[in-house]
Length: 132
Image (cartoon, rainbow, N blue to C red; front, side):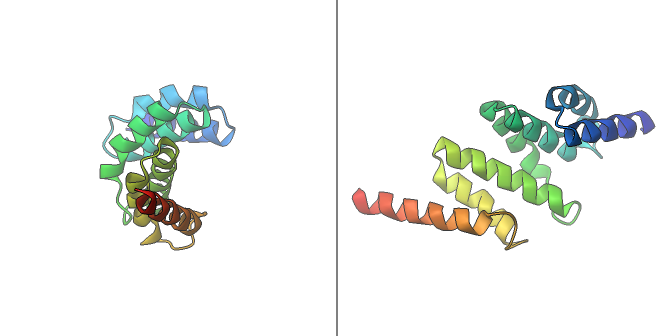
């Protein structure tokens, strides 16, 4: 367990230094430990997002989201849903993006630009519906 914990903290440090490609293999080593699973998956997703590998990032975030619990780790819960929403928005899946933004807003109304993005999404959805 101590080795996993040290590995996880080293990966977090590498992420802090924006050394995404070095952090990913360490996070993959820690994702099988239940205590670090969701944290590792979200962080792998973020690394991939910063490396502009959107589909891979989406896969890891989708894998992580069901295990995110606001009570256990509020910041992880918010960032996992927020970045998955951003990816879904980029992909054009506005309904799924909105669903994940809502998961953020209900626990932290002022998190990043979530409210603004939701408003823009709702406007785009309304415009799309009126043209159909």
